[in-house]
Amino acid sequence: MNKPLVSVIMVSYNTRAYTVKAMQTALDSRGFKPGEIEVVMVDNNSPDDTVAYTRKHLPMVKVIANKDNKGFGGGNNQAIAESKGRYLLLLNPDAFLAPDSLRIMTDILIKNEDIVSVGPQLRYENGELQQSAGYLPTPWRVTAWMLWLDKIPGIKRLFPTPYHVYDLNWHKTDHYPEWLMGACIMFRRAEFIEAGGFDDKIFMYAEEVELYRRLKESLGKKVFFTTKTKVVHIGSVSTKKANAYRLNYELKGIEYIYRKHYPGLYWYIKGVITLGVIMRLALFTIIPARRETLVEYRKYFS
Image 1 (cartoon, rainbow, N blue to C red):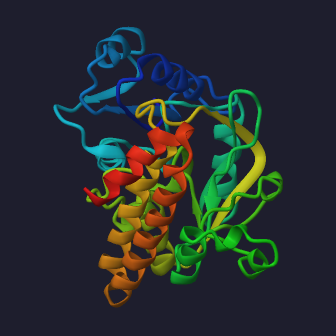
Image 2 (image 1 turned 30 degrees about the vertical axis):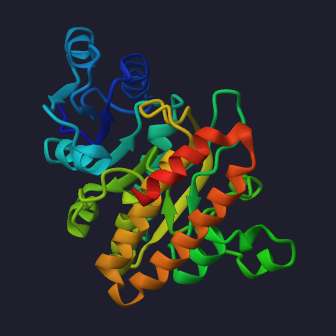
């Protein structure tokens, strides 16, 4: 049997139906010889039957069953340590590859040594484009994002490369951003390992941003967002929470990035983020329909 060319890495929590479907789309990828694709799935102590079902119905998948939840970064690191492929595709359990997606992304890395990571255009189930990339969270970008400066006509022209690229027209063409959403991203194994993998002190959200920051520092290579292939990503099936729930984790992740890499700027970033959360609390207090969002933002201070 050939040594795997690509290891598809998946971290699952309580999403058996989605997880099985996602793994099957990886196994059904076109353009590979038998044995060139391996799938490694870490289950973070799901209360459902993900582990038993996978072992019974997809015996070719390597399953690692955790007794506790190690988060996104920790789970991926664990699976990657047990994988053997030259290339690593990190795939969320609610992200579904098109038949040629894996081949297209693999060929991009094979042919372009100056690219450190590639990710596809993401779309929701209904076909709508999904925001999935951005630029590293400099103090200026975090300030614009948290204080809504990048939403104000005229002022937002000062932010051509924002932390989050919300402009869906941007996502219709190829680009070289500085980070990609972790729902579907590919790396070379050697470079991922050289950078140290994910920092598992970030439980979830912002861990890919922190990794891309280290990759840029250590290798200086480009990150590539390609529209040559499209991947369906449902989003948040494990948490089923309001956007503010995810944002709280992301904000804590950014604060951690500054404590770790830019300690002299930590209190500035902490202050900007705190002010931004207070502004959101004030806004959503007067919007009854956003009570769930309000509750989640309050948790930032707990």
